[in-house]
Length: 239
Image 1 (tube, rainbow, N blue to C red):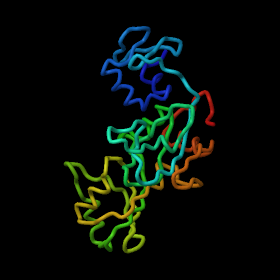
Image 2: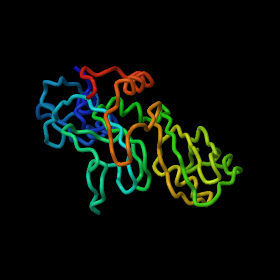
Image 3: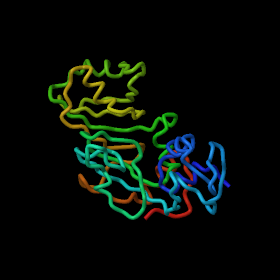
Image 4: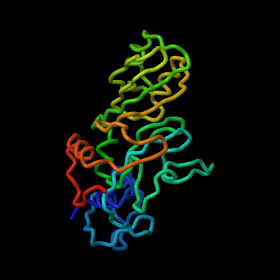
């Protein structure tokens, strides 16, 4: 037996943290009984989320090169915005690992492996994320130290390294993933961002995938990710 949140995360419902939230909200049942955090089950039990039976799937791991104009969600908003799921059409149910805002582009990981997603997104693991940022005006090198010391909403921005590659292009490495954190930090210093592209998550780099397209992770890429976060391999290998 194992904890229910792990089973439903493996069914592609979402990360383990999201699954824990669903349980806390009373939306998960085992054999007709509402689950509480800490409950355990087996894959043979009848488990439902919002009244719908879960279906365990083979693990899937996808690298997407997200273009601008798409939101990092599996469902459309009330405004009918385009979601990244328009770009990734497969039979398995997958979800994005973390977010990349609508006006940004670059690397996203989609999977149905809730345990790996949890390791990549939980703040305690300090997963590195690397970005290229183009600004409208020349960047003042003296502002690098200001960015490193900056606090937003009472917390440091979480910048590990900043490199000024040209007078209008920065390379920024973060070890956190707060929403709009780079845009908010640069806006505080009165910089306008023309383009923001994520090129790396942990040791996974954006390679061999054109803008707006996706591919499955290679076994080598997946093994390196698992080694980084000490995630055990699931019983079925990636596509």
